[in-house]
Length: 538
Image 1: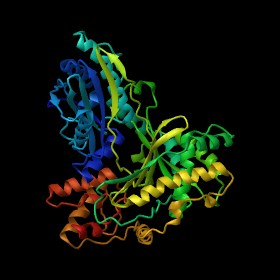
Image 2 (image 1 turned 90 degrees about the vertical axis):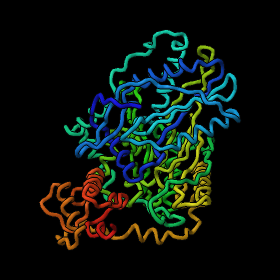
Image 3 (image 1 turned 90 degrees about the horizontal axis):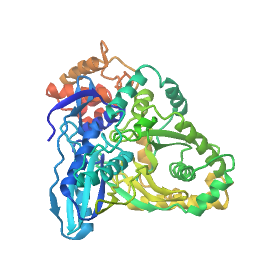
Image 4 (image 1 turned 60 degrees about the vertical axis):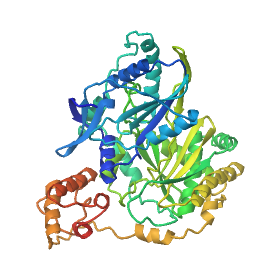
């Protein structure tokens, strides 16, 4: 176990958000990343452990935990220690080992204690093993898994031969350097132009009112329902060909179809879809393990019932604009734009369309082993609705993933079918208005759409009324808010975010209240609320 602290450094904006999310729902595996290596041949477990030790030594972030120091979340880098592997015999062959690895991936991490990486070596036959690696998203993203496995496969052969392991190029920077550089650029105003772009793009943006199948009865459990989705490659190719005003990628074609489905499903013409961006804007960052990925909330305008080809061209324009302004962290956008918040729901973008950027090394022969990467796929619901795709060129496949506290299996199936149906209709007639394209999901009348819309349209009190606290809890919260927000006085009807609050300050209120003997509901604190509303919930 890691014990000695070497450095205390600023956390990145992404790490801050994950730390906050853990305060909302501790002991969750939602942000675990998992991948494995299938090893066939004569394995030297000690050599594999030595290679893994070298990987963890090279990347400080794999020895990092996150703590709250004063008003800031910080990275604490621990001293290196050897990775120790015990070979476990698993009955049932490779499939049984995969099931064990997936169970390993469901064990939560403690961001403050660490370590935030765990490994397991399972033997399924005399010369066959599965090596599973699970990390927390705060220290590794999808790209990082490819880096980790590539280094491991490069280091194992010299380790098996008993040679020195300094065979990889020295890393020029560490993840903590990126986090410090990111914070410096923000503090010095270097990202102001990019922030202005997003302010203009997202001005007066309303959340999607997704017609849920049922209203949640408490804190989201982040369970999922999902359905397979394979957009037909021929239809994608046809639509790319007719969009002759520039490069249109397969991803853009699917995004246009998905936006059409969302607009038809919700009845809204203003649609925001989150897009993942790798976030490695400097070549020095490419070989690093770390949490770089950012979410870009792309806003699409379907008012006036555009034809599909016009929408596709708009998608291309908006995507290119987003990719030219990718460095403003999603967390900063939320705190700057102060969108409507609901406990347990992602602000700004309620849905995401992702093409997998986890690049894994090819299977290789090394030191008597065949080393074959094995993705340990997990269906996860970070957003209310996610379309998750993988593939190359026009051949994409994946699934739609919906939060099960909001949606049922029928909706997942209909959503996947609707994306394909829209693509089929658009490929046959690219000039058709989006309202004319067949969309099975739009034809269904959701049971509780009206209730959800009424909830979304409840007025948000943003103006201070100067109300005086009347109960002990209201007095305590008024003092805490004034302390955290650096204000002289706070009224009980003031709205926290309108008064200058943000997510980190909200958690500071929770921590300070806990120190004073008052346990506040964290999920409510992170939604829109006043002191009066919060005190009534205690």
